Image 1 (spheres, rainbow, N blue to C red):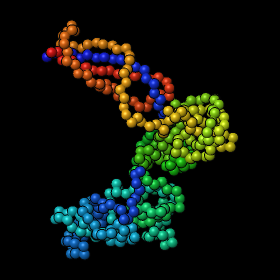
Image 2 (cartoon, one colour):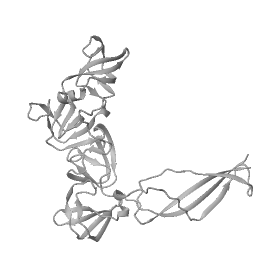
Image 3 (tube, one colour):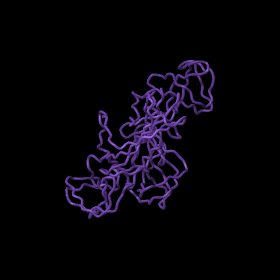
Image 4 (cartoon, rainbow, N blue to C red):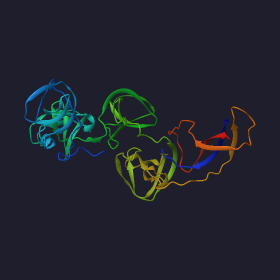
Length: 377
């Protein structure tokens, strides 16, 4: 059988507008049994039962957990230094180990970041004697309760009651890595990895070196002030334009320190007329007599990605456009007029770049190709 490849192309104009928790550590009553434990001692004794006889020893390794003594989580919560019995899988069957400060896989913990030096305690009380201090860093959190956190430290599990600001509910802990990133727009520099924290400076578009990151969202970079934080998703809009324009505010509106909805809110503006000198992606840079140059977010509801609600049902639209027809027949030429049994599929014949900028209400040209393979009967 001979195969003929028939290609249709169409040029279409479409209108579109594009503008550039996990739950936290569970209480001790609801804490799930860990799936694995990391043995860190040079030798961990294995027993034939709780309070039973010693059988053999295990070298440092990860072991699979089958069960634990009743109330193990409450025991760890009440006294983080207490011994706890865990039932684990071994090469001779399920056996018991009795360990203190059990270490679990990273994904069993939540993560937090300390922004200042904090004191360590053996119990959940700031009235007790401090066991030492811990410097600003990321920590693994086992329990959290009313401003207290049981965290993993070099001294074992310790409680902290932070007096400085903390960044919690992190998806992953901060990782150490040396690499570079490219800042594509004017980017704010933060003292802390938090969009609502103080902006301490600005960087123009450039490549910068970083030493730490978490979630590959925040990056600890070198600056003239020393190491500070930046976020590739926070900065001037990609479609920023210089413009002198009067903007009429019909409702009270929030004032932001930088163009991001998570930025520090500096105050509120009552309905009035303001002068903007830059705009992009719904953000307006305005002069303020009492705050200096600040940002407001004011855009049409249909152009606001924060208010976008996807349709609950999809519809089929008829596209009217000029069609171009031509035929590829590698084996012969001039076979037009033959009966065909066509099947049509749509293929993506090129990569899609989502970094482009499209202004709201402006038309976007879309070209696509239908490939139809026809088999001659």
